[in-house]
Image (cartoon, rainbow, N blue to C red; front, side, top):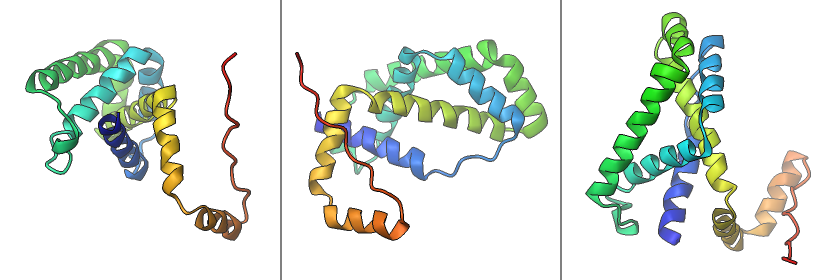
Length: 164
């Protein structure tokens, strides 16, 4: 679990820290179409590809056991997803985006799709449980001071639920 959590957390951070491509209305329309045309399974396909790609980095290799066969499968599945979204489901939006805004329109589309897929992954109860452990290592006083300095209320974690 910790191996997967570490890679997913890295993906999340990359998406948060990456500058959003500044596309116009055509890139935004492409992004909307890609999100609308994708499924939860498609989001998993994208996240698996990101995970298997990140796992190739020397600093992360010891935390994952992605086999070459899994990597190839992931590549093939993502290629099929891209082809379906760009060449079929959202072709009109992709053509207009490229025509009027260039490749940043595609970047915007996939960036937004990646953010939605990441959100789906992070909403999973197992991942949420893993994320909750991070709070054990944060200095609560420093977090409170940051929110106080910003002049905004500190969000409170949801109350634990009990199964009935």
